[in-house]
Length: 296
Image (tube, rainbow, N blue to C red; front, side):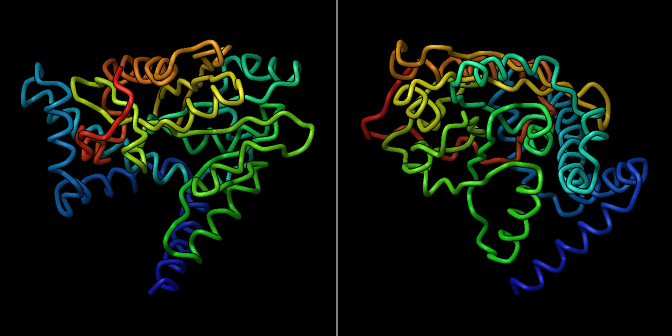
């Protein structure tokens, strides 16, 4: 069964790599219709998340966001696969880092950093082109896939673009010395925490939200500046990325402060354009408990 899943992925990769972007988006429109109206992929989760996050919006407004979300979801899924077969120089024309010096200045000072991302717009292209823009040695944390063949294949694709991948299960080792060259650690930080006992709880989109403590923990422990990658879609298949400093001196912050800044920045971005966030994720499945956790 794992072989079938692996070969299906290879087929999709080959097919997507040879078709032009114009056909890619026709395919995406078709997939979005199937996903929303036929398969109804996580439709209840999407609707529930949107209604709770935007109680002031009418049912018609929620439905509009939902339709746009499924188009976005299919766009970013196919774009992510397509990106591995596109020349980095060509990809940079579609995915522009507006101010790379916000990151590169830390390399010039010999400082490693954390780049905090989110499941907003196309985060995958960000990891695919960063090696052509930033001076740091790049490290991306990821959760290994259950299919070993697929996991190995995806790792191979990602590492072609000068991005080292490290499992989240090895996180306690990854911030140790890796040579003299400064590193940039990429975190997609809007996921559910693996250990609720260590969660940082924040009111986010009007809901109690358990947040990862890892990025803040390592930032404060090793005094790593934290920079947020604000990705915006300017038109279909084209993005801009503004690097925004969240914290330059983490060792001077209070517990929960860095996470609060990150979540507030992301919240403001989502409110302005909600359809470009990953609403199918069961973001609020964890509930506040009696566990000792940090409350903001």
